[in-house]
Image (cartoon, rainbow, N blue to C red; front, side):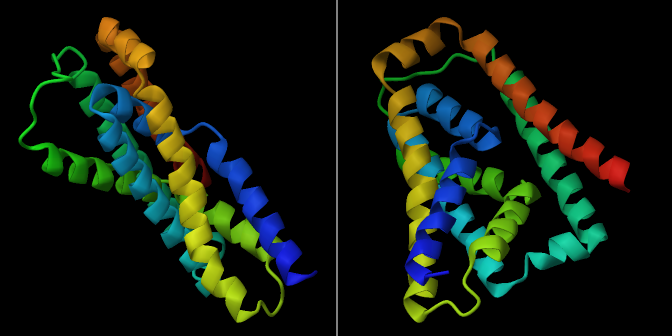
Length: 211
């Protein structure tokens, strides 16, 4: 397979996976409408960095361990599931708390940094993403990729992950989505918390079944 064609095919397959709804989408959308557009974009950048981490591991062949070392994959599933459940509970418990949207925010820099780390942690908490990267790479990576291929792939992965979630952040931080959120904050936060917790419990359940 030509390296250029393989590069495009690989990125196309990853785009399909990135735009599929999941915990990352829920987190970025909620962050954008509950905090600010800057916070949503910061979380998106964290998602992008997580994608680069998974892609780099796949390039190094380390994610094959997740497939062949069953105990490691189960452990990561349990840890990732527990984190998502914890995050869901935090969002649920804070559903009734009032928020200030347009006031001055002297701690904005700190909040944006927190959103970045939250996005990164949510992205890397899902070991399935690592397996998806490893599977796509093993199926579409040329046997001997040229140097340009290896150098261009990590930044391309960052653009795909961060670009998609930044678009989500911009869309959900617009006036109408934010007004709708403020009008039904408690219900929306509880729904978001329940979705994240349910996804975490699903990971834990799958790990328990395979164990």
